[in-house]
Amino acid sequence: MSMIEVTVDNQQIIVEVKRQAYRRSIKLQYRAHDFVVTAPVSISIGDIKDFVESQKKWISKRLADQKDKFILPELPFSDDTKRAAKILVLSLIEQYSYLYPYQYQRITIKDLQSKWGSCSVKRNLNFNYRIIALPAHLAAYLVVHELCHLAELNHSSRFWKLVAKSFPHYQSLRKELHAIDFKQVS
Image (cartoon, rainbow, N blue to C red; front, side, top):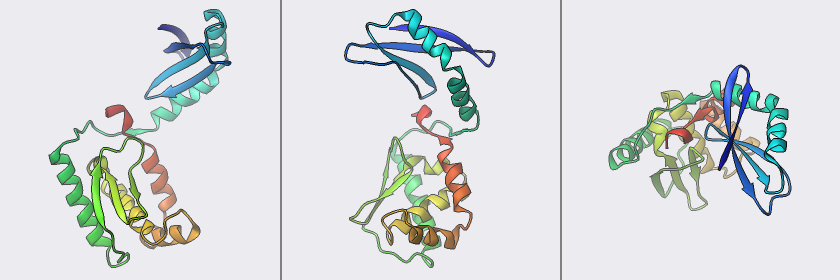
């Protein structure tokens, strides 16, 4: 494995270089706070460096986006955190039950890697255990969002009207929730 160093916005950035025999083009990715360039084995390291240099604007944007993200504190996935998350979810469901009196089958707390929650066609509600580290207004929004899926299993205008009964400013809450980075602490 090799690395390339590039200066972007007066900051030294290390880019990992991966070679793949079947790859036909160069690809630059930003994952979990790391830049990785994947290239065919036939491309010289000089050409790869030139490609990365040509992507400085893109790299700068990724770095700026990252500065705006709120990072959750490290939180172990344990029986205690699962129990705390379930207590929080159940209390929020009870709090909003007068507006959303929908029946659900089961509530499960999971170590979800890419989302905050889900609702299955079997009416099971799943929540990321990290909900306990969210600010209270975002935890409430998340629970209401999943409760509304019990009535509308999609993101149609009818679904968003249900969410808006509790959170008329749901767009800003949704954006705020998506800006939180929990992947780096897993």
